[in-house]
Amino acid sequence: MNTLQKSFTLVLAASLGAAVYGLVRIRNSEATAALSNNSKKAAQAPLVDQSPLKTAQRLAQLADTPDEQALAKTALDTADHEVDLAFAQALREATLYPPPLSAEAKEIQARLQQAQKTLQADQAEVKRLTAAAEKASGERKDALNDQLALAKAQAELDQDEVDDARQDLIRSGGDPHGRIQQMQQEHDDAGHNAPPAFPAALSTSERGLVNRYSQWSALNQKKRLLAQAKTAADTAVVTLTEEHDALEAATDAEKFNTPQLAGHSKLAQTIAAESGAGASSGSGAEKGKTQSADQDAAELIARTKRIAGDQQNLSTLDKRVESQKQLSDIYAQWIGLVNQRQLAILQRILTGIAVILGVVLIAIFFNSWMDKLYARLRIDKRQIQTLRTITRVTLQVMAVLLILLVIFGRPGQLGTFLGLAGAGLTVALKDFIVGFFGWFVLMGKNGIRLGDWVEINGVTGEVVEIGLFHTVLLETGNWTDTGHPTGRRVTFTNNFAIEGHYFNFSTAGQWMWDELRVMLPAGQDPYPLIEAIQAKVQEATRESAQKAEQEWKRVVGSKEVGSFPMVPALSVKPAAGGIELSVRYITRANERFALRTQLYQAVVELLGKRELAPRPVPQSASPQTA
Image (cartoon, rainbow, N blue to C red):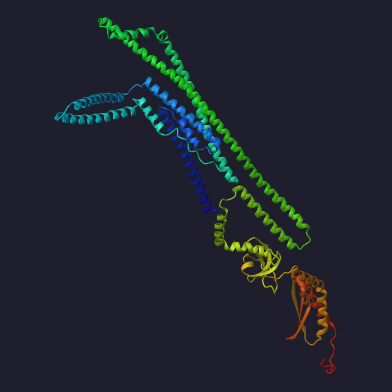
């Protein structure tokens, strides 16, 4: 690893570390923020807990089947009833047990009381002026009407002052009863009794493992929310039960500490004394006793009201506990429905996986079976190789398409999708598309096979690979010269089979015409040597000529090919220094060099025997000239 690679690796490692550190910091900040929010929520707990209704409303947006929608409607009704009970309990507690006022709240309350007194005085003045104006006439009436208008305006200003002071008191926490009433009004104005708008049913017609997993994931998220809602309902049951038990114990203790409530004797005496206090004009001692009796009666009445309110709250808490239990049961039933749907989708997912594995196994088995079948066929090996290639590619394409169909499902708007995709692919991948269809042409009857000697776009060589898009040749140089490989692999796109042309020098047996050239020396009779060479060539190529004639007839499919002579053809012409003999004969392309070497060796032997034989002496020549 050089310095640049090491530096690049270090940069990547540092970037990865920074990314991990950033993720950790973000998670920590999110956890801190969530904890802070929870602390704030705990510190600012609402006067009335409306979370059951909000949870039911949020879950109702996830009900996408008739069974789930029925449960969601029941949960909404139950949660709404529970919130109404909570409002009633909160209002009763705010009335029975008002919280202690802070200094600010006391100041605002004093301002509110003063504003209320002023408003009452203004209202009394308006009432007096209204009555006087009705009785007056003339200028007196006009003057009273002016005063009445001014008094009404002042009363409106005082009313605004009272409203503002009341709102300030509510915000400062000095009037929880008023705050709860506002919340209840907002709750009523929200239309909680209106029928919920359920979402459309979840489509189960979308097939494919990807869509199935998305459906399963959505149901899993819904089940998680339902489990949280059920846990909240169970927790509320425990909390409300504890609150009920504590309030019941406190109420029993209050009753035990108030024995007057048993016989109501003292209360009756106090009420009787209170009734006669106004008519009697006794002494100062009797008045003191009357005031003491009034205080005891007021305290007893207040305590009785508190106990009665606590009894009502106990009944309300029982109802709230029952409502929370009903919510827990509803959410449990809802979770059961979601589990059933998840199991059904999981079954479809497993079925899809089984189909994929089955397709793969069938493809493997069919491929092996076809290999054994092709091995038994009694046809040309190149045709077997072609059939095997076509079968393997077809099988692979079909298997891939089936697997993709199982994974992604049938695409929607298939016609439009295929049209647009086809137009785009035709423009962008024109050469590859033509090359792909060119592969089918090359695999056809008039195509080429592995081992064929061909010429494509001026390049001659032996076919070593025929792919879906490319054909590879091993270049052999000049065909008419040596034909030895140059060592270069030349790759062509298969579109030449459609847009261009190519030469195939191989027939079914790769038969070809080869030529043997011999220079015969001058001054000798060439005919015996020509006959001897012709005999050698005929003897060496007799079997090849017969096979070539049979195979050419089968390939061409016509009897007229028999008119071409398959025997070796001789050509004799004079040349400088002798006679040039050319012999053309049939041979296999891969055997032509060996056969040519054999024929040249035979010719050399014939020429050597001819040289060793005694030459005839011409009669006209003298012994010295010879």
